[in-house]
Image (cartoon, rainbow, N blue to C red; front, side, top):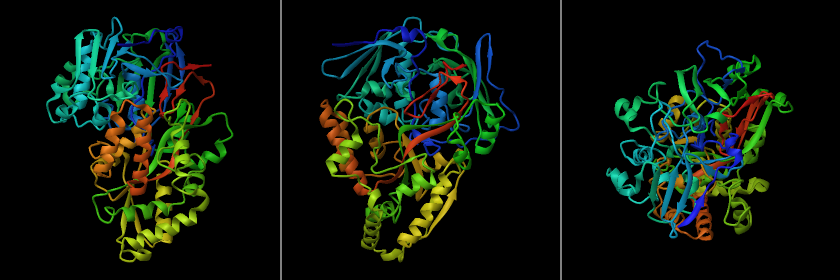
Length: 567
């Protein structure tokens, strides 16, 4: 066995080890990726300003709307994940430097063939209700994730290479290769090696779940503090839909002494102006939903923050519906878009123009290398030509003519679905104008409330829809897996057996160089087939009170508040 003991360092005792990441559908347009910032109104209730009490800091923040779900198995949005990472902890987690570190497991071992992972849990782990947490809780949580009755969006992405997953996904969940030889040992058997499995383990869907709670409450278990039993640094104390979700320090968390918060109130607001007003009056100390019209005035203040995150804003085509079942149509629509104008004018420079699908910050085979840089070197340039947009438009016109619609003649009026938040509607309006001017295509815009937007998109009930993904782990497969035909996050129902086989080969090799080489092939295939149309690379922008310190914002788009202080 190759020993990978992760010994606790002093930094851990001081509380700098942070919970694992979750989702990536972006709802601000950010779908994990989708982490959106469309929230519900506060129903007239205001949040208290951050205060220090004997028990720690009482903090109020706004990072999104009423989440669609905070069930770790069902969530696929950033707003939900920001809640989940405070309530739950995975076997391994990601620290502020992006490194995999101990979580509920203090060490683990990997067999020489890379097929067996043995995790050793910490002594004395507890659930938030004070009951013992054992390795069997991880067995139950992972089997529940694989269970087809759960219909978890991340099941394939997280567990696809665990031995017996296909049988589990077909209904025989006991076939999944996870076991608990004793209360503190959790064993995972893989069907093939996975070079990034330790990163998968940090995902928010891979948490333990208390079986008794699910059996007693069914799918309602996440809705009340009494039933939302968790194992992370915070535990739920109140949820008022459309207003707020409040968490308090979980005294049963193994590292509770390092948690500086007494309470954490997620104020749920959909309206950016309402969020900004709450920030100005001191009702909240951080807001993710910033009014776009205020950005020019805020950019030079110490409150305004912009940081790159690993993710891509893109649009989905429903590939099973005409005319989007024709790759030439999809590619024409994609090439006709001026991505530099979208990022720097429509999005006011808060995003970066997408030149490929996998963007900056994602690693390649060599330590310190970039997947996007290697793509550029291999292809002699980027897929989209920001410096020669006119050439892309001419190619788009030819492709549309090849599809039987010269100058848009005979092309039906199409519908673009989006939610009303951030830059989503302005982008839709730009696309409406762009496609009319360049291709002669008429497009209607359908604005849908956030609460029904992601379920509608996931069901495939659209023609074109705004989409996005923020990475859950640092590997290109996290983005490229979205378009495997069996993926629960394949909203456009793209189905290409050749692509599926390429991804399967990439994700089942033990050769790191081969893994990345195959993923480059896969990205080229997606772009040439226009399985989607990437628009921009994500940056997060937000307002944060200067005195709010020790809040960690990760490259995955999550905020970690559990160790926050007011200076």
